[in-house]
Amino acid sequence: MTSLAHPTSTIGRVFEHRFLQYRRTFRSSIFSSFLSPVMFLAAMGLGLGAYVSDSAAIGGVPYLVFLAPGLLAATAMQSASFEATFPIMGGLVWNRIYHAMYATPISPRDIALGNLAWIVARLTLITTIFTVVIVLFGAAESPLIIFAIPAAVLTGMAFAGPIAAFSATQKTPARFAAIFRFGITPLFLFSGTFFPITSLPDALQALAWFTPLFHGVALTRGLSLGTISDEPIAAAIHVIYLTTLATAGAFLTVRNIRARLVRG
Amino acid sequence: MQETSPTSLIHARGLTKRFGEFVAVDAIDFEVARGESFGFLGPNGAGKTSTMRMIGCVSPISDGYLTVMGMDPATQGPQIRAHLGVVPQQDTLDVELTVRENLAIYGRYFGLSRPEVARRADELLEFAQLTERADDQVEPLSGGMKRRLTIARSLINEPTVLLLDEPTTGLDPQARHLLWDRLYRLKQRGVTLVLTTHYMDEAEQLCDRLVVMDKAKIVAEGSPRELIERYSTREVTELRFAPGIAETLDGQLEGIAQRVEHLPDRVLLYADDGEAAAVAVHQRGLKPETVLVRRSSLEDVFLRLTGRSLIE
Image (cartoon, rainbow over all chains, first blue to last red; front, side, top):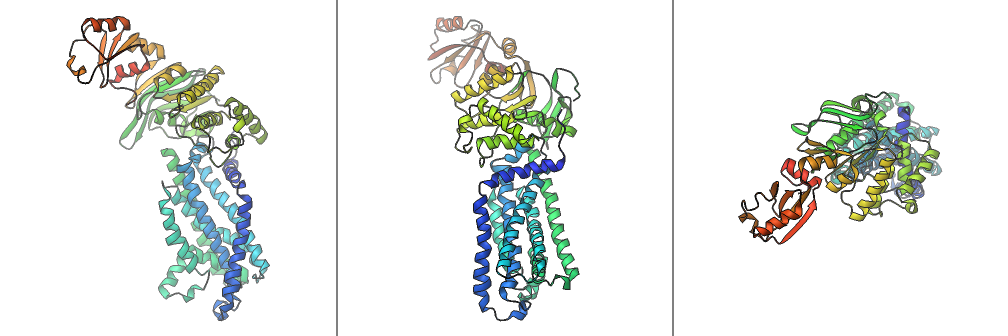
């Protein structure tokens, strides 16, 4: 009888499947991962930023320098959210490939964690390219920006985990539009990416504090500006908050995918 | 690998599946021997798919006892699944990948090395008559080709048992015959086949032995021949009458056959000599619009056992 492989290798095979799918769109995906930050930083950082005169409110740095790390975290959020919706539900409902995997020694846990691991890899690629663009724009103040990559990936996973868990319960993509319209887009606009949340009315400031993107942006910006060491406790809270969301999301994703596959 | 008996691969006693209050499979007993081709015949909703999913270790049993290859699905699911080939009712192919990639990645799920997977994929493409389409996307393939690919995929781990849930549903007759031919070859190679079907001809073609399921229970068991001998006559004479006539017959067919069955669209006379029964009908002055004498099939067995047709 063939011996059963170690669990990490069964997770690895689910990851391998995603990689095989991705190979098809690899070139265009790399290109757009590069082009998108270039356009955003040029248009908003340089173009719009030229009109931002009150640099004291944004930490005394040019608007481009303020904006770039915020966009990095926000981009990770957007990519992660997309990867955690359609592909997850599709594997259960559309082409049912998760059911095909479950007929082999692959377990529901492997399927959930393999797909989340894939999202980590995608985000690492996207945020690394983004960070390189930031550096090329001269928008990084500190070498600590290298750590903005894992911080942005963690931000993405704080969204991917819970959203994947939700996607695993859906039979149609109808509610995904609502996630993007009432969740991702407002967060993108109001969580400190484009302006500090201190510009918001008090009630909204409190609300913004609870959004994961606020914590992600605070981390990436602190690292890019080199100001993170000024507030170590705040930084620790950001990391704990995001890690908790990502972990709880992963746990629920395993549970929901298992329930769905066992039901048939 | 430990086994309860050298010949019995699947062993079920009082096997039950409940979904809340609903009983999908109600305490069924069966055994499948190594090398055998075993079928579950029954209409939609009889509990066939639920039974297959329990054997496939993807749906826990609610009650009773089940071993597959001597192992317990509750605790050794992945080990059992490593030796199963599964052809689900609905296609679960990855339409974003090519035909060959579908086979290759599936082999990887079983932990096979890439060179081994490549070698087996070539063989299976040949077997499934898909070599020419190997590097094409899956989506434009015909229904029959997709089914053959699904069967090829299920063989990538060289399974001990192949589970086929309604393998030819939705295919045209030519595609079905091609598929039956492939399955017959597997059977000759000694692969144990377990299949569900609601097609009596499929069961007759492929099954050495089968159980008839109805309303979550097994109502009969045997080889197709045994079941026909036990529950039906050698021949059947099918009579179709003009609209309204059949209702007025009322006893006029008594004594012509061992059993008379009134269906909405026709009357069936069960007799060992169907021709003689047809002649007798005419001698009584009855004028059916069409008369067809045929051999008894599993359809007749099912009708006898349940009072209903297999395909409604």
